[in-house]
Amino acid sequence: MVNVVLFLCDITYACGVTEYEFGEKCCSMCEPGTRVVEHCSENTNTSCAPCSGETFIDTHSNFMKCFPCAVCDPGLNLKIYEACTSTSNTVCGPLDQHFCTEQDRKGSCRKAERHTICKPGQFVKQKGTASTDTICGDCPDKAFSDGLSTYCKPHRDCKSEGLVEQEQYSLYLEKEEDEGSYRDNSGNKISI
Image (cartoon, rainbow, N blue to C red; front, top):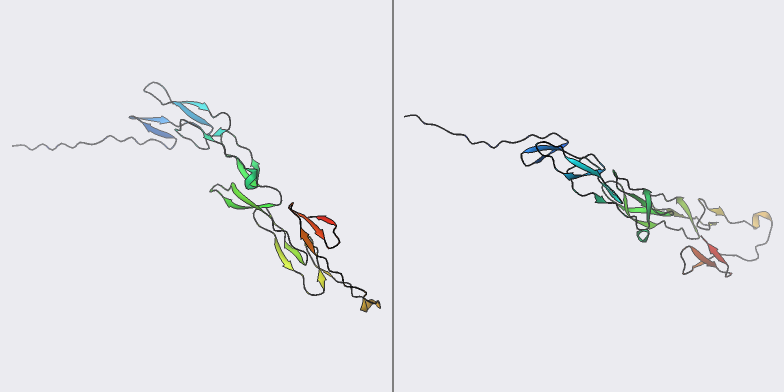
């Protein structure tokens, strides 16, 4: 008596890095910036077409649809840093005088906030950038700043100059409704 052992094996295809399995074949992926129109067959290679309009694909793929380009929403304080192409998505950045507070995994800004405006009596310790907020520092006693300067100025010392101090003047600002506009204690409008 003879025993026969049968091994049933699935045939697996080892497709290349820029290929994908379709049915029992390895089809060529489409180049970045293009999408699959028709999968390969026994006699034809994959048929690809360019992404059009505001769409892209940034890698070799077997996608049949291109992805829509991101929109940089000014309502989220964003502007276009790099425009969308057929091979890359839009890269958003913060509006001027704003900094990015949230980024996607590829470094495009998703949300931004306005830089802090230093108050009178403070100075700009570190100017804000596209990725960092402004850092304000407090002026020491007997010094002042309008909040826009990168340093504090000493108050004038009238006594050391042989002068009599007639009146101390302190500037205060009231925030107006429109951002970046103030009124001083004399009622003069100051834009920052």
